[in-house]
Length: 230
Length: 135
Image 1 (tube, rainbow over the protein chains, first blue to last red):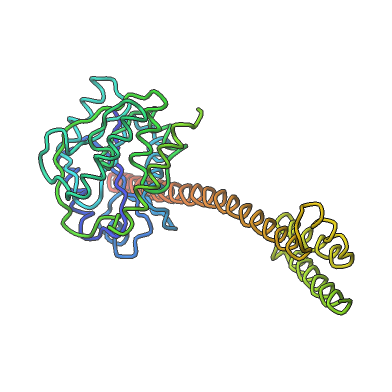
Image 2: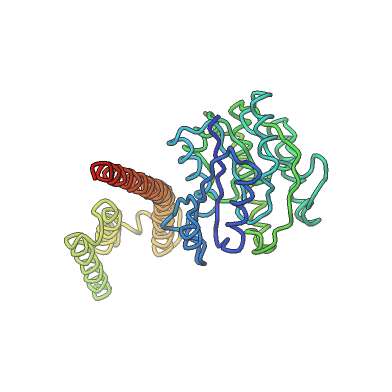
């Protein structure tokens, strides 16, 4: 089973090599590809020097456009499974094999790594958790499905989802919206418990002042998704 | 009144000439210039025949012609802005797809190049072995 880890990276010079080594050590039968989203630090130089596989975006596209590049790469290169994996050291490659087992065994279309199924590892700050809970409820009302960690960036897709995301993927704050997109198309999405680490270097892409915009935008995106026709 | 009309007409004509000049120099696409030319032309007509404006004001039940003018001008501006937003959305989607395609191509070239270099090296080492055997 051809499997790919897609690592979007924007200014991750401090974490990127460690992330790749983690994958090579703990998920050795997964290939990986870094998507360098026009980093302004030395991420690209570092990748080239270390001989890492990298897709280099000549213009900054933001997280959605970067991740979608990974899905397009997975589609072009015939991968059966592709998993999004943060380049900032938050995610733990030790869970990838379990996630793939679940994906295959239960014939799912997507498995989301959730911090909140077993409440283990870094649980995010109180305010963030409140926001995440809100999206969980919104998605439940909208699709009837309970997703405990809809903002998780650790998500594994099968071939059908790879193909869907290669064509359609939201540009910014894509996680909750794209889950609703899949559920609305009748795809089977489940969660697997994972532990995440608090990021060691760099800060979250969502600062506090932008979180209000984030909430409104994603809410609206989900409502639009509800009335979209496929 | 006539003086003002003349100034208005002059400004409009100059504006239209400027737009046409930009189209000639290919700094503006005809497609996107057409709405501006149409608006300028309409403004020129109203400038030449101001009584049209009074009729419009009567028709819409607006007290003074100048308010009818503001209303029309405002609505047209909004329409143009809206059209531009639609165009920007489409452009940004296209740019995204191009950037992704460029990145995918570049990665593929690099991979093929390193694979090709590997093969060349293999060929060379094969030749060396052969020449070593010959010796």
